[in-house]
Image (cartoon, rainbow, N blue to C red):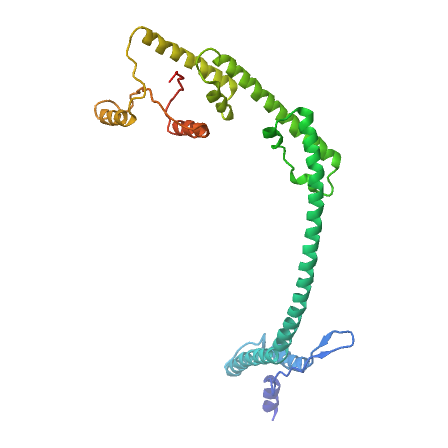
Amino acid sequence: MAEQKVKEVKEVGFGDIELKIAKPTLNKDKTLSIGGNFSEIGSKIQSVVDRYKNTELTEDNVDYVKTLKRQFVSLRTGIDRERKEYMKVYITPAKDLVDAMCKELLAIVDEGESALGKQLDAYDQKRKDELTVVLKEYVAEASEKYGLRDEYATQIKLIDKYYNKTQREEDSIEDIDLQAKELAKEQSEYDAGVKLIKSECSETGLLPDSYIRELEYKSAMEIILEIKQDKISQAELKSKEDAGEKITVGEPVSDEIKRLISAVSKDSETELRTRILRVTYMPSQAKLMARFFGDNHIKFEFIKTGF
């Protein structure tokens, strides 16, 4: 009898154990309560854990401990199964229903937010349109103050900061004035360049307008140096002509190109060649033509003649 009593004390098992989770209830303070036999089961499991977690295994108890370990696996599976079932019955449907109802509410909120946003945008645009009228008056005043021609006056920009609500009107006026002042400087430099070009081309037969167009992408001094070189070239041609030397200008380009291509095999590819080429182009194509020669590293110069 004594041995049997010792055995009963030694072998502490789970007994009849199954997790049961009660239906969730809402408290008066809007907190959620979920009842069940958590404490009861927890106590039973804990007593087994406390009894066997530090047990020294022997031939007498090893089989029982193995059985207990399998029961722990079954417990974990059962608890997880009850959790999933509870989620499926109570939590997931509630979540889906709440999501659907909130989605409807958010759609109404979005409608209102969008409508008000459009009204505010229209209001702000009206404010900007009215401010633009005022800013353009300041532009006109600054343009007149510095004597800007239309092609320069239209370059004054109404930049974004002018429309900030924190922007002071005086600061915008000052900034516009600075823009106009800088453009007046550019206009003055352009006019001075035109004057120099016309003076340099005077009584030479060279056409100043073709040089003036180059002011878009060259400095006035570069163009003056170019004109001086063209004068030298013009004088050399005139000298040859006066000496009775035959001068051929406008030789068919296709024949010249054929000759150049056929000469590649005879001469070194690095040898520099100089040819006179007559090109017919519109004023708007001058920059394009200059860029083509520049991009292909072809040195060129304009030689103005009477033809």
